[in-house]
Length: 118
Length: 166
Image 1 (tube, chains in turn blue, orange):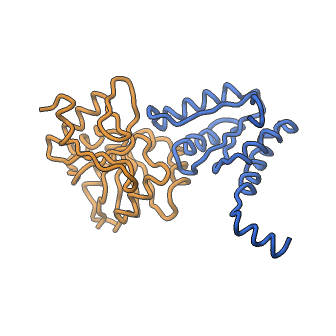
Image 2 (cartoon, one colour; image 1 turned 90 degrees about the vertical axis):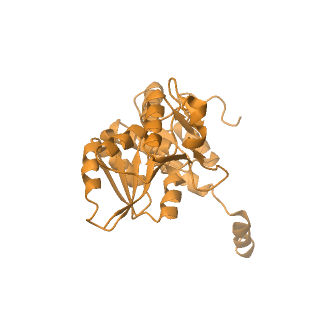
Image 3 (cartoon, chains in turn red, blue; image 1 turned 45 degrees about the horizontal axis):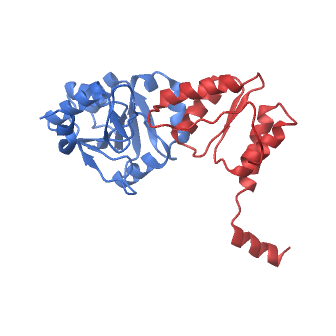
């Protein structure tokens, strides 16, 4: 909607038929499919969930695979924008981490601070 | 003396808030993963330790190792949650002398020829036969993914007749 068609990206969802090993295999296949050699960054929601556990396993057993949890829209948007100017997967992981955190705002509290100290 | 405070079947083993909820409820401080694959894949165990709640003693062991350790719970003073991927693991542990008070089923994936027996719980023919074995040996089997939210527990004893067991 905002970013248009996204090349070299894949969407993987945990399905009722997924065991841990099954999801590892499915994720691995998608990583291999979208990887052109520079590596793959996996963005995930829940740290400690099965997709994150499977991804953590892949970061340790495959070359140039990185993963960042707590995914939100700012994280996704910033990563795809940054990807236009870098092929460095570590740099993208750092962008995801920073943008994800910056995207979380307690609106009323932040606005209060803004009003007292603009 | 260590105490087994929960026996659980879940083919994703430890995931998200699911385990935290049960561990708090049962006041558990240790998890034994009983699975030959995880016991022999140190990286997999490391990932589970990395993701587990802080302060939890997490170990993995083969079925044979678990059978030995369950014979001697005098050492230590842990409150232990046992987790295996399949009901057959508990059947094997029973064959080796262990008697679980009951067995809880959490997430069990859909697979070829599996049938949905409870919330998030699908069993293939072998798993169902093993579940029935536990039942006939007097072990209560109940299905509940998380100890909070709207999902009530489902007792195997109350649904087994739908799957051909009389």
